[in-house]
Image 1 (cartoon, rainbow, N blue to C red):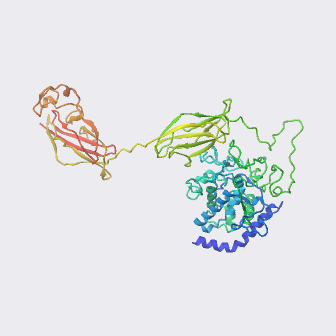
Image 2: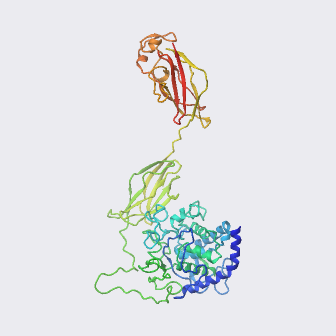
Image 3: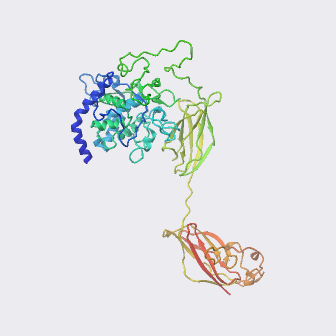
Length: 631
């Protein structure tokens, strides 16, 4: 309550300044050489808020700025309701993407009303990060038609982040890349946040958290922006939230420019028809779809900044300037950032002798197309429920000459009813083939559901036969019953004469585990010596009749191996087969459903005295029973 009350106090003092500062940022950022004057960051040094990890790892971003004229024509009204707003093309936001921004605002307003997240802020970040998912190139569920990834975060001009998602989200198994329309780092998406469970969210209610889905990504971004009890109607909190995405003053200025622009009004355009940004800032190659994935509908590929442009000079903020002109010469809505329209001169290629430099405006030569996917390793995989498959699924992309093809996006998809999942609980992942043409699927967990399914590998964007691997999940073996205590059901002394048997059913025990009946427990019964420290199986005295020794052989002399004598039932024993067989003095039986175990008939030989019967279980239960044999 105190935090909300404090926000309200700050809001009253800052609401007027917010609009003025946003407009000032818009104007100043488009004036060549103009100084930026902002509250909440008087030092001029962009700093991510404490405890936050920049979402995109400082990756490149689009530096296009909005036009100076208002998106709404005179007489029109910004916002929703009434006839659709019209105006500059830059004010158009693809329908599905716009819907995702607004729904994220509504969800956050319910869970964190004190944050006061405006959907226009999500739109501003989405514009700068990915051009609204490449102009709205998403399917009906809001998932990008092709993956949008930033450069490899390998420490060369960007953060150094080793792979954390096994390539599930970004297709890179060595380092992480910012991914999706809101450019989340996989580790931030899955492992970030105050509780370590990630900023990922399920914005479209499909039960998955996918950074490549605009509904999920927009909601995750909204919650990230609202972290640390921020009130985004307060300028300093707003600055910290945006700097949490990319700790660059230039980045902050551009996001604020688009925020101010979108607050004046927007209009909806069809998916795939959104206006694409053309200028990039930062270091590296910027946002790209997965290599080899084919063109995205409505997407234009632009050249990467040359070394030394954007933030390539050791991370120094250059104001987002770039020497790389867009095809056609200028950006939408006017000239280049920080310069006059049409003022940049194209680079003239050398005409004299010497090696010629490659033309950065021309796409690199494409490798020979892939014509087949070859399955590697076992055709069938088996794992036990609850465990991981020991061997990963691998395929090799080959061209018509049988040579490996690198950079081919291969989708591994689980086909059939199964609880198996790749890392991140994904049922499909896309991985790029390496220099050897091999794509290796991430670790596959068997799940808890027994049965068979197929792991199907396909080359994305290519009509090729799939490579299938059959996978089987075996049911987890039922755990062995346990018993931690054994007790006799009778306290009657056990006595028999030499050469006879103890009373039928004389030894009956009950097994329990933690005080409850233990059914089906294996109990080992052994006639042992009387050594208290290390009892071993006895070689004389009582033995078990049902242990394969045959029928009784008669008197004491006969039981000792004399050969013949009178049996207890008055019959004559031959003393042949029974006498030759070795008496069994150890056997293992299982308790019944009632936890009871009745030992088979116990016979005696010619030895007299006190003998020990020891009963044990695998869980450490021990019971010793005395057997007395008289003459």
